Length: 254
Ligand SMILES: Nc1ncnc2c1ncn2[C@@H]1O[C@H](COP(=O)(O)OP(=O)(O)O)[C@@H](O)[C@H]1O
Ligand SMILES: [Mg+2]
Image 1 (cartoon, rainbow, N blue to C red):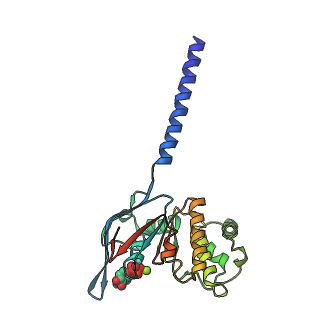
Image 2 (image 1 turned 135 degrees about the vertical axis):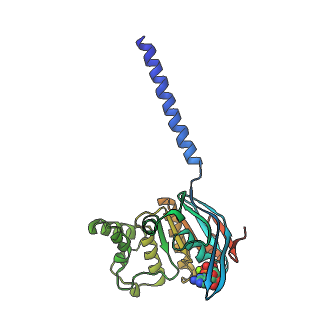
Image 3 (image 1 turned 90 degrees about the vertical axis):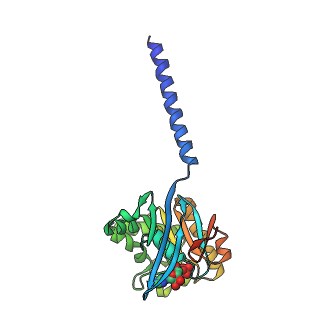
């Protein structure tokens, strides 16, 4: 009787272990959507003249992707990144972040999403000129209410990881473009957001510095499993991307 029960118990445990394994395998093989746009359009009003910056873009970005949006100047790259990053609303269509419809979020919820879930890197670095590199990196964590000791420690750690520890006390005016952009990348990832959007992050850098920066972003994508979406029209920079979407006149070309 007793051994019968034991056999059943062992069998049950084996089945449970098998189910967990299958679940893990399924999870590993299933691509997880992080961003999806559904036929989004953006029409700006330029003094009464409508400007169609994005015309019906439907894309899905998977968790952990290292992907690029390419296209000539004026093709809609910045507009598309702003729509994906909840910095602007589409005129038509929907944007889903982690399967949640951004149109259903309040202003307050959207600002929390921008703070917690999205890191931004801009072409012109956009560091606060009067703050040191360390303070710039800490700034977002200050807005999130993270205590000073913790945020300082996190900022130092990420600077060390990115090899820019020696810049901690420098203000933006004392740094080169490449150094400022590395600080901007550190700032974008310091609170481990699931996604970083970088709008032409290498446009102001020479080609060697541009490669170093993209390598750094790729390393962070792999190591920290952060999804990176960056825009560029530099062929060499685009070669680093695992997937490139080409925009032309506000539409995806391929
Ligand atoms: N705030 C705005 N008001 C009016 N037109 C705009 C505005 N922002 C961008 N545009 C126009 O939208 C189009 C796409 O711009 P943008 O998204 O900046 O492209 P890209 O980043 O590829 O250079 C361009 O024609 C641009 O002039
Ligand atoms: Mg742009």
